[in-house]
Image 1 (cartoon, rainbow, N blue to C red):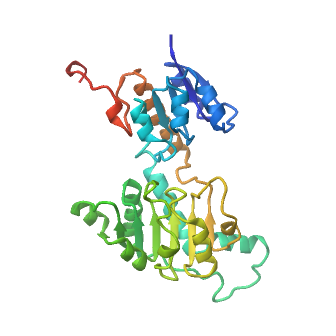
Image 2 (cartoon, rainbow, N blue to C red):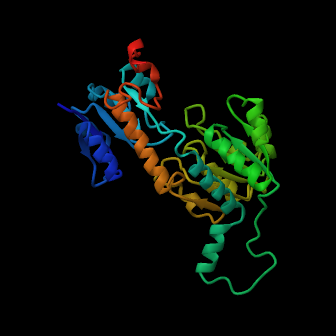
Image 3 (tube, rainbow, N blue to C red):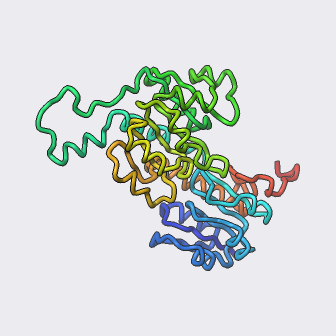
Length: 335
């Protein structure tokens, strides 16, 4: 008898077909987000969950003791209580690497759009306000040759830094929990600085750090006050890293020039003060949204789920576990 799994949201049909080769699959073809109670109800008897951001906490895990794998179709996994999963022997996986370049492309697009007032310009044109040329019409700030600050220098942060240094001749500074190897810094043309120096020196600050209780509101009123008045802020990391209310106030009062945001605290709701501003570019968490990248993310999540539940050529060895300690050690014969 096949093991049963739940696919929490709609996904590519070919991915569902591949999962059905190994499992009895219940899928959410209507793509209706389920509340916690409905998710628990549907997880009864299920060994695995193909997740896309659903909250996996102690209450759900205790209500679904048969669950053995939670495979997130995302690189971030702050929706999952990993410690609680580990304590119950539930393997958690994510989808790193496959979205790095597309996400970095989008992050840099937000930097450009915020600095050069692209959405303001489009709205200006659409409402019929463009009637003549003026020397100061929608003047923004340069990106080339300026200082790019990166907070969080993981895979995506490094990809952002490469684009800035090699594509736009930018000076790159960064702050991270740990300093990169000197060879990596040299390849990126990046210089490690304190968080305070990063805020003070960056013309364009990009946030790419993971969300945790420690990074909650890493950028708040005090940090925004340290930035240059002409600086821009771009967040492609996670909502909650920025205090959106404090950011809205800084933008409204001209304490920084502009922002580009793909993630929001409490999304899909967006702080109403941000919606009222013209100097912020807002997008609905789509930095990884290319067909090829989303397909690769779905394929990797499926690979993880198949292997985590002991199926396929990599049985017991999911490619990208978050908590590998819960996996059974392989015998010498299986290596």
